Length: 131
Image 1 (cartoon, rainbow, N blue to C red):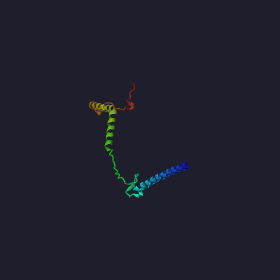
Image 2: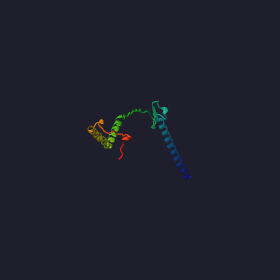
Image 3: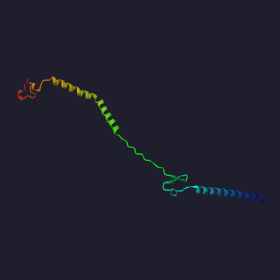
Image 4: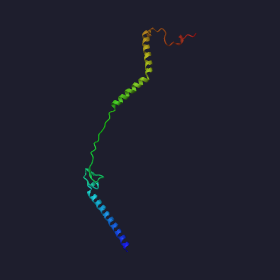
């Protein structure tokens, strides 16, 4: 019978220690809940919110900056570049057009007046000579 009493006393002691530990953890948990400043956003004022640390925090002020871009200068630069590229690619054609004009000016200065032409451009049927 002595062995049975020893094992029941050991189990009673273990149960008592377990109950005391559960009570200590429960009291600590209740104490932790009591230390919280807030549980929801309603517990804080209108200008603050309840954080994850259960404390009220002020809402951050966010300043919105408006950025306006002026694209006039870049568009002018691009337009000038396109014109320059077009001139570079068509430089040979432009030179070919200028040379005949200069030749025309020289030949018109040396050519006789329109009144000095002896034969008319169009001939009538009677004037046509056949070989």
